[in-house]
Length: 130
Ligand SMILES: [Zn+2]
Image (cartoon, rainbow, N blue to C red):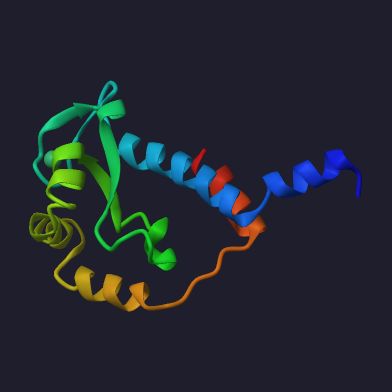
């Protein structure tokens, strides 16, 4: 393998693609239902510029199977996502309002299903959300 191709193969590793997808998916989540560059924090309902919002996960993103799940992820402000560690009691109420009372059970089932991403799967998701 030439030096050039080695570099390419390294760039397409799962860890790198996952990082790229984190970025693309976060922007997609923050843009969902946005208005003129602003969106509401899912939990405190205050409006923020998209750049001041984060992609807040209800179930931690360390659970691969829910890391890029559109129900599990919503725009959150730094106060809710970081300082209030996700503001999870309110997050749960908002999720049930939006998706029905059994949504927490559905997420809990998905949470425990092990998930290993393949490079091609990650590339497909990057294209979907880009
Ligand atoms: Zn908030």
